[in-house]
Length: 98
Figure 1 (cartoon, rainbow, N blue to C red):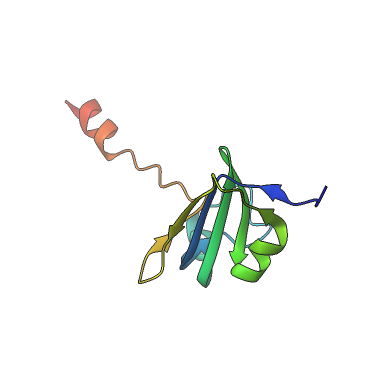
Figure 2: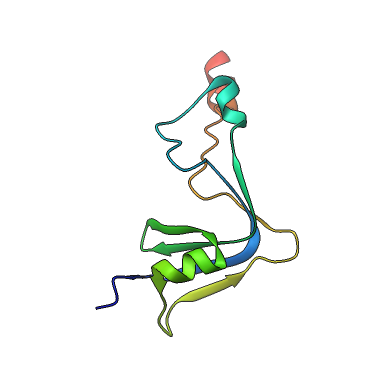
């Protein structure tokens, strides 16, 4: 056993924008601006779980892939936002105002 997590999705080469390590629980107010930006970053998922986020070297050290792993090349200006949820409620509030 390698101790690595086998992943079914690997997104690589994009600009990863995520919360800093240890940045949970959910933050609000001015702390929302505290983000980590990783150029040429990778994100790996195992099922519905984010297994690794970081540079290619960091992620490769923590994961293994199989021929079935879907690989998405995100280079060329793509932004990856793992785990960031923008829970806007504009549509819900608009309906409530009627």
